Length: 71
Image (cartoon, rainbow, N blue to C red; front, side, top):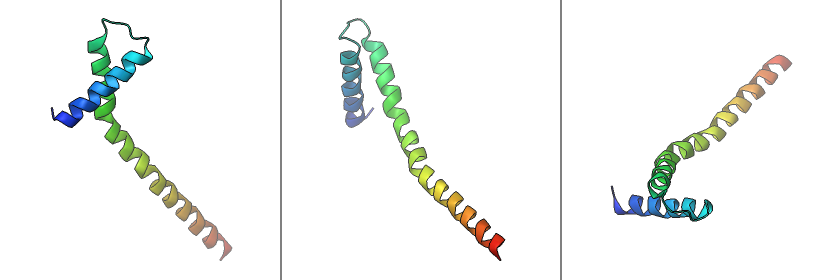
């Protein structure tokens, strides 16, 4: 695992630990949760980035449909 990725996961696991009241004994679960969040984030970001272009495409199709009805 590259250092930057490992550091991001460590920081997120720490945030999760803090948010859950700093209870000990759940470090592995916090790491797994953080790892999952970090590793799945790019796919979520890609979907979010793609959403506006799909919405614009739908708007364009709707606009063309209205224009064709007027003719």
